[in-house]
Amino acid sequence: MEASWNKRCEEYKLPLTDKRKSFIKNDIHNVVIPTNVDCLVKLQKDNDLLCSYESADVVLADGVPIIWGSKLLGTPLKEKVSGSDIFPKLCERASQKKYSIFFCFY
Image (cartoon, rainbow, N blue to C red; front, side, top):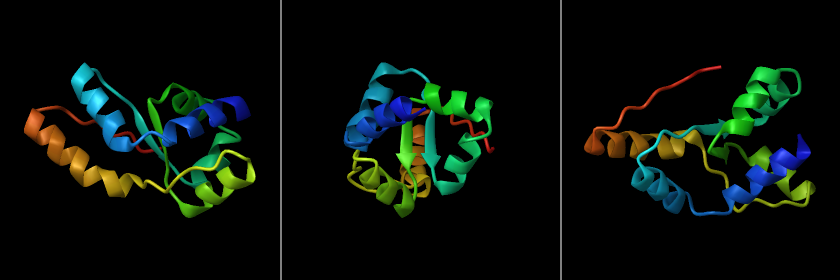
């Protein structure tokens, strides 16, 4: 799991706006998962959830403890990006472009 987590950590270093633009430009579906400490605890025991994370297009650092942990693991993330921070803009953009958004609550 650590190798996969490190791979996702590298993705955080890309500006989210550039990543989001490439999603829209490619006109394909994408999976974005905000991650907090509770999610990390659940990942330890839930293989289905782990598979979801491994197949996600973007995993967001949704909490300061995630940032602290990334520094301790030697893969520091630039900043916290909460799902609630990007949600309004994502919905606004989807509405303008007539895209559908689907939610899965775990």
